[in-house]
Image 1 (cartoon, helix red, strand yellow):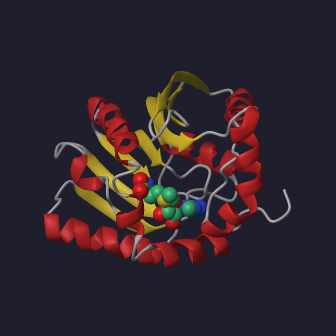
Image 2 (cartoon, rainbow, N blue to C red):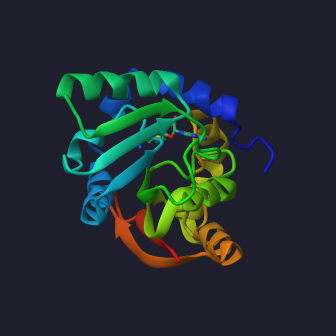
Image 3 (cartoon, rainbow, N blue to C red):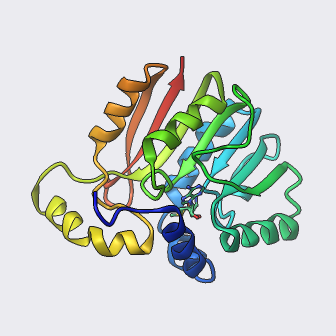
Length: 212
Ligand SMILES: C[S@@+](CC[C@H](N)C(=O)[O-])C[C@H]1O[C@@H](n2cnc3c(N)ncnc32)[C@H](O)[C@@H]1O
């Protein structure tokens, strides 16, 4: 799509969000974060939190879950570093500036990959999902929580009208479920384990893929 999201635009958008991100998106997105964390903690082991942002989720994981967090935005990640230091989160092994599409981790490395409100914010969602699966161990889970665009009706019209402004703010409000369905079919190495409606208003979904 013309005027689509690009890496420089995302980095610029989140540099602007960083100072106020927790105030604006802390509470409203919290139940989605908590449900992804519950799934990841039940799997345990080593978990990658991609697009970890200001690190809002980090203290909610079990202390026995080993965590790596990455984000494209240095200003967002600086806040995550402060959080880890202040709260003495000794289970956080790594925080690094990294593009979610080119993860600097070996194949089959993580027990779970978590991406909270990220997949509609990256420039190339399908290639990014491919790299999430590459770094997952077989049997491991990719756990997403995200806004999924409406398939019809007034919400769809609103999302399409809002899309150009939303891209400047750093995400795609009209991201369709079909895009994930097509990605999984093309990838061939994953199965959908769950899609669960999430607040606010059920417009968000918790989505789990298992690596075969
Ligand atoms: C809506 S925020 C979500 C932050 C956090 N996960 C939360 O729950 O609040 C999206 C995050 O994804 C990051 N992001 C966007 N594109 C990225 C990319 N290509 N690679 C890594 N992180 C990216 C942004 O910098 C931002 O921190």
